[in-house]
Image 1 (cartoon, rainbow, N blue to C red):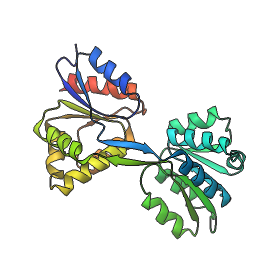
Image 2 (cartoon, helix red, strand yellow):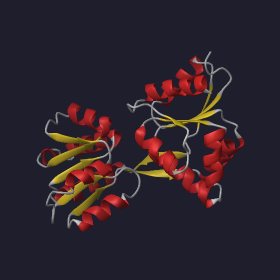
Image 3 (cartoon, rainbow, N blue to C red):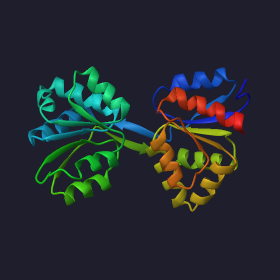
Image 4 (cartoon, one colour):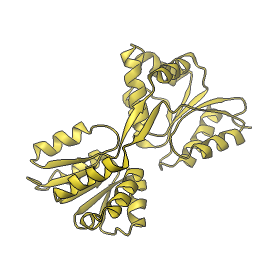
Length: 260
């Protein structure tokens, strides 16, 4: 069995059982390290946020995550504000958002693979005084906000959930990575990398963590964006699939041990 006896850390919040089963079948020992969790806002708060955003009559909509898009469209229907979402220019970030929009019957939307790509599409367009609704995904988007402010546009932030960390568990996870307790770690979102390295740097362990992930622990990312965050933090030995899919990332995990 390809992962026999190998301890694999899973930084994952969705499709957890699927990942666990796949690793067990390969002989590995999966450990779920959900040290950064997605916490949904209360239902009434989400609906109020939608009302306030739609009341501003946005002309451009930027959907950023599949789950967030699903919640936004579902709650909009419940409060009778779904139709206004069909009238603006819609941008979808990533394949998960595209799939959700298609399921809801959206046809005329533009696809981008990142927020930077979204900004590039707006770069040469006159958006002075344009209201742009942005589905936020757990944390502030400072680069996008600065870009839109400089263009004279108004950014309408629509919050549906926040990220929450368990500091004690996060610290324990970092120690396990530094000490080589895990043979490999799989990151499924860029924000996980951000929070883990932010905490490591607060404890003056950022370089140590990068070194450990480069030398002691095989590091696998679910896709290019998450891999990019690892590169930014000095992790150069990263296995990731060209197509962002959990199943492909698990294949990369197998490749890592084969190569190693």
